[in-house]
Length: 80
Image (tube, rainbow, N blue to C red; front, side, top):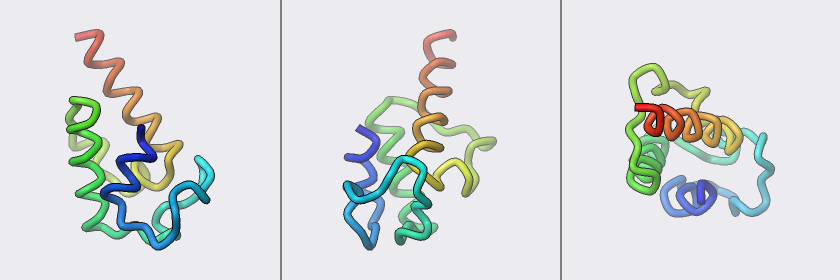
């Protein structure tokens, strides 16, 4: 599901299917502007909100990092 959101809003220069989970999305063409669109798409898809502490480049640098952040936010939501 994360790959779908990246495909729709990431504006990558390469096909997301060719990237591994740990590959650098910024090296693949993710821009600051596209990161905002990606964040908004993830918030909508997973019904979460990224807090300020996660609004940093490292959070969105790879599918692995995004997945960890989304999982953390979903876990927090369930625990609340």
